Length: 532
Image (cartoon, rainbow, N blue to C red; front, side, top):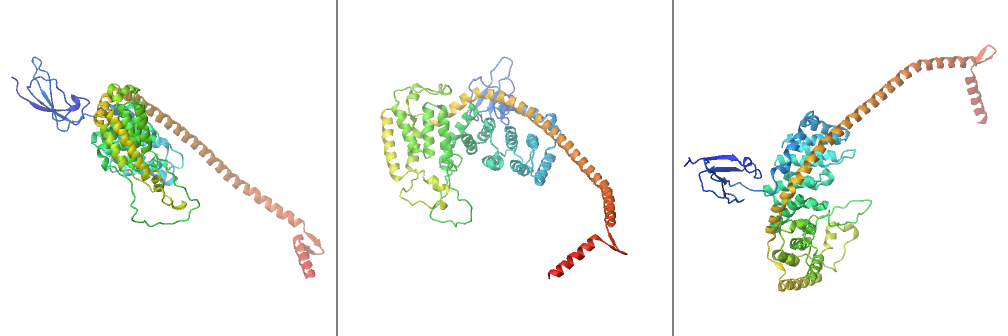
């Protein structure tokens, strides 16, 4: 029997996919077991080979296994980018100060300068983060058009994640007009993975909403993380903010003169402010992405309910039931999750109940209410027009109860749990697509490097060309000034000669010399006197 020993090592030395700050305790000897669990405080026991001291790996209380591995961040490739010779020429704080002052004086921020500055944001601290946000605002409002490309957005996101302050980034992402930070699929995945690991499901869901607004769930990793975040957000449905106005108190109206009265228009997409509607439309879009299957139908039905689109949801439910003899096609990603019974079932039971509650609590509008004057209408008035009337709500409730009874009698309601199905799907599928994302993004980082180098070279050449042009202009101005000095003497000579010629044109009358101009003036005065 060997001595019993206890020691600790960092988790990443043993299990790369475990969070790097997790501590594993080793204690031995213990019996051999191959049981492995992802739950905290469970044991992993190593094999007892001859001559070895068997050790037990006890997973600490802070152990959590997440969907994406640490390698997804492509930290090595990003570090190589930061070590590029071009970036080594600049100091972050000095460059930031110069850019801020230049914009204050000239109103211009260079695209290349912004790319270099954001690439150096690994040096960002909480003490200069406000200055960086001001520079991002200035960049967006530069006199010259500046695109906020993916390399800038990714660099900003990485810096905020490294500072553990990504929550501060959400308002900037939402304010697209003033900051223009639109995450691509990879950057959105980074943010959602970060928030999910922190347990900040609300923030992760808001990133999914941003991808919905872009109508882009083409990336499988982004799709799966969005699906997980939104389904987890459903667990706190009562906490979702719903913008409601209290009609009992009248707010004071400030009137001002305008040239044109704009008609409020609600586009039901970018204008959505109610998080229930954002979550609903995102779930509906995620469900459409799956095309068919029990999960698809459940997400679409619940999504339309949250989005307040009950007529469309009831019609869709009727169409699904009318195709009961058809076997729906299942997307390859879901084949391992869906059985034949799952394809036959229409919707999951819990989500069907949730949809019924949403329909019962749906807001209504008075169809006979007098419409406001044109100049008094607001966006809230346009949103209210989309609500059901009481009679329509009653009719849809009756139709839904009939459909629900038919589903129950035909045993087409599934007892599966949505969170379990989604979590199983994400765990099973995300690692299959992770490696391809890593490879493609490492190549993308290399393109960032070459693109920045080329842009910097072009900017230097443009600067040198402008300097040559300015030197030529300065020389021309100097020559013009010298020419003006030289010509001044020639002009003086001409003036003297002209004066002499004028004296020669005088008229002699007897002994008195009469100037021609003086004689003309005298004649003019005498003529005026005669007229008077």
